[in-house]
Structure formats: structure tokens, C-alpha cells
Length: 313
Image (cartoon, rainbow, N blue to C red; front, side, top):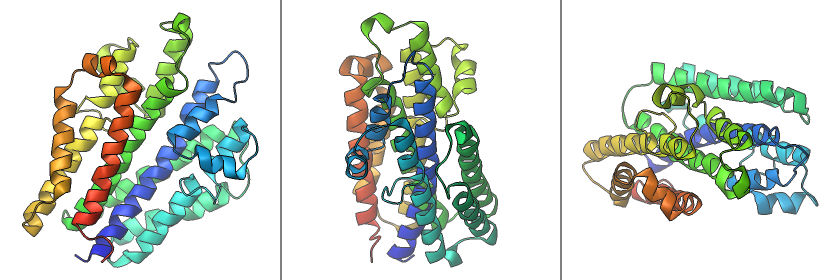
């Protein structure tokens, strides 16, 4: 396969996943804001920093408001990680590799783009946000469903899945970091009803509230929630699950092409650490520091994949 085709498939699914992830970050911010007894615009500083777009936001806006932050994350074309920017970039990549996709997959992506152009043509009202977020997640799910149900399991499938799970791992780490990085309550609030509501919001923002209850009998404990989203290999948005799939798909490519790259070693080492480190060790190290290092390592893996498979040749 040509490197530019692999690049198009990889980034198409990274962008589709990122669009959904941006919506989930907005959802996390909205849910967190509901736990405040008074308006706290600074809450959105954490969301913007977790999305790694805080400096870019400051270039466009003079002050920080919840409305501007939501609009920036949702549809601002100056923000390459906004939902609308990502959906458009995903569709452009899909057009570039159109012959590598089934008709059903292409139509799902194109229909997503058409619907979101209409919904995000104007600034959204706060009251409309739950429906908008649900629509984004539903459309992303339809694209994945069409892809899974119709695509041949070959290198096209592998590069697409690698893009999905690199992006998903990044997002889960960032959403979990929202809680600790900016919304960490005062010591007196730890274990309070507000603290529990915030942790519950994190679970809901990654669609993990019910599945967490099946594993931990619905008892909300920060260490258990962090363990669930980091190390539980059965939870489809956990870091361990994402890296299990990354190692698997990179392994298929190694067998297909008869060669290994630095990316294979990095992915395997990261998965090994995710499986071997206890949540107690992670919390002792500092959850924010751990997540920051994980995000850096995940970005490194993305660069190694791009270099190893010559995405721009």
C-alpha cells in the first residue's frame, strides 16, 4: 500500500474519533459545571487545556466564557480540533482514499458531514447541547458500524483501526485529566457528594457509567474509576484496551509486510506498563503526571507509525 493511502486512512479515522472526543470533552465540561453552586468560567480553562487548544483560544477570544469555549470546541474553523473542523478533515481524507473504502463507509462519512454542516451552521444554544452531542456520537458510531460491517480485514482495516485507537487513548487520558488537572476539589471536598458527582460525570462522558457499575457495584471511588479507565482491558475506551488493539493491528502489519519498526516496540512496552502497574503505584506517582507522560508517549507512537510506514511518500 502507498504511504499516502495509509496516511489518509489513518487520519480519516483519527479525525472522526477526535470529533467525537471533542464532543465528549464538551459534555464533561457541561456536566462538571452543573456541580458548581455558582458560575465558574475557569472550569472551561481545564477543558481547553485538556484539548490542548488553550493558547489557540486566546488568540481568537479576549476573555474566557462558557459560551465562547463551547463554540470554539464545537465549530470554530480556526480550531483544527473543533468538531466541525475534524469532520471536514475526516471527509477530505475519505475522499482521498475513496477507492479503498466500501460504499457504505463513504456514505456514512458523507452523511455525517452533511448533517453536521446544518446543525453547526450557527452558534448552538446551551439547551441544545445534549442533543447535539448525542448526534455527534451517534454519527461517529454509524461510521464505525458501516466500516466494521463491510470492510475486508486487511492492511486498510489495520491502518484505520490504529488511527482510531491512537486518538481514543489520547482522549481518555485527557478526559480523566480534566478532573485532576483543573477540577480537583479542595481537600475538604474530597469524598463529598460534589466530588462523587464529578467522578460520575467523567464516567458518563466516556459512556462508561453502567459498565463501571457492573465491575464495581456502582460504588464511586476515585481509585476504582481511574483503574477502570486506565487498566481494565475489557472497557473499550480504557488505555489498556486501546493499546491491546494497537499492538494487535501493528502485529498484523508486521506479518503482512515482514518487518517491524520502532512503533512496535513502543506500543508493546506501553501495553506492558499498563498491565503491570497497579493503580496504587500510579496514584502515588501522581495521576496528572502519569497522564501527561502517557499523552507524550502516545504522541511519540503516532510519529513512529508515520515514519515507519512512510505516510508522506
